[in-house]
Length: 233
Image (tube, rainbow, N blue to C red; front, top):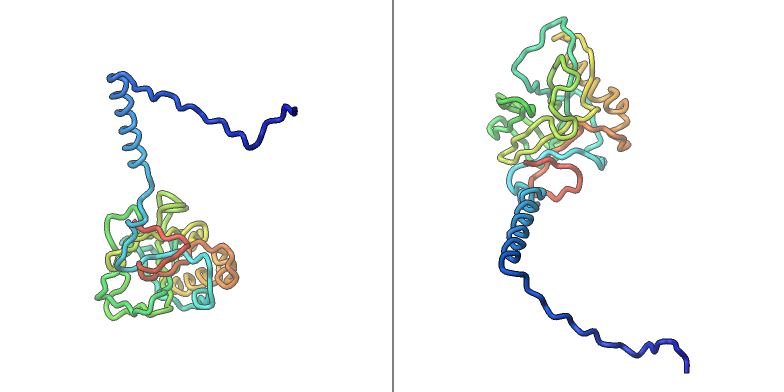
């Protein structure tokens, strides 16, 4: 007779007797489990449910289409700082470009706000009779003596409050342009050129062909399901 095992023979496994820890050790083990569970919960990432359901969020454009890849000056420009630049002084420019990806025309009455991460005041996006129409781009910028004037290049930037939904647009390396001499009569055209055709936008080809442009964004309804980056908080 062959010594090979019979595949149809399935021996049963006798269950071991369940052992109970002594009362003192059982209490200690239970306490450790509760503490571990509490630490895990406190260190967990924010729940998806924390995403706003009202207002508008800013998202980085990582998948350009035939609408949000058309970037042509002149742009509306918003300086996000109280300190006024001095003519003849040298500055670095930190900027982002944001497209209105909604079907709504915003006005000053919508009270849209923006600030830098470290600022303790808000700057209105629109004032007076200004409008932000669907498909329109706005450049948000600061003039600074620092190389990169926000605490972190990966999670700090321009913080937006758009009808109650708060989000951050991180400029990244595309958002910095160094050593310009400030001339108030020429600055607006200079900023338009830098934004549309400068090195940060890959000479203008980055928007059209999906090359890495880290400072280009658009706003959409907070209810929109987006797969690309949206730093809401």
